[in-house]
Image (cartoon, rainbow, N blue to C red; front, side):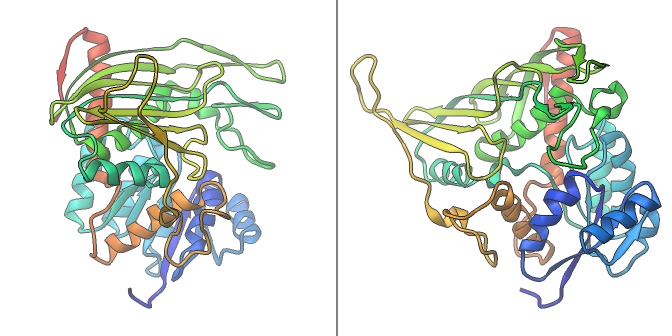
Length: 384
């Protein structure tokens, strides 16, 4: 590995700085060297509070900084996609939040710009780097399922209280965090379907392969959010969706996603073939330490019983190289985020492919948009 430090500039002082910034700093040879927000006072305050050398309040000025190698972008999709394009055209490697873009044309333009400028693009989809998901992928690749036949994916959150805020009105708990009111805005590019279906698809397609056909329905089930202070926030975008998907390998299954589901939190991901079944449950929404993995094979069993077991996750899946973490001391998010950034650095050095790549995110966007179109037209859609 190169001895030259990789310098990261972060745009957004919320989740990207507080969580991504912490994870970047756990990796050897990485420096969080710059922060950019929309206003000088917030940029300078963030730089001071987090010990960052440079503060910017215009992302274009940040992109002129030749010392920066990677730009980590966490703003809302409608703002972010033009910034991503600017960063790619400036020759920067980009780590981008999800949803990937507001529409398919924008998603295609982003991947085209990444390819044309010969840089690495990775998206913020940490589920595949959760230790239990790493073990799931290893079992599938070793042939445990046999011929893949089906799957069910659910990614849900309820309207969660956090002090005087309410998720998704407030997306990141903790003192001093500004609420993400824009998550309710129709024009933001975010929604319960777009956000959570994209995360789900980037895990599903990673372990089972791309989608060939899709149909589904999306809806806005909870149009008004009554906040703990008594005020009401009106949501303008869909908060729940369901899709039936046919994969290119022939497997068929369902995907449900939403962020206003009572008493439901996290991921449930089940896959099966003609030889076995795997079930991953993650109430921690990809925090890397809460997920569990169940394995059951095709042995005949008595009715009502099971031939399976909950697995112990191998300890090596918690040990991100160069970091102090292990299965006993890993804090939330740092293992899954650490693996993502570790592999992104390897992709920048040309030692492996990016994962989750912009090309994968483009495919997920194709599926998301196909289901939205299917919901309007009541038809099946070919993907890609």
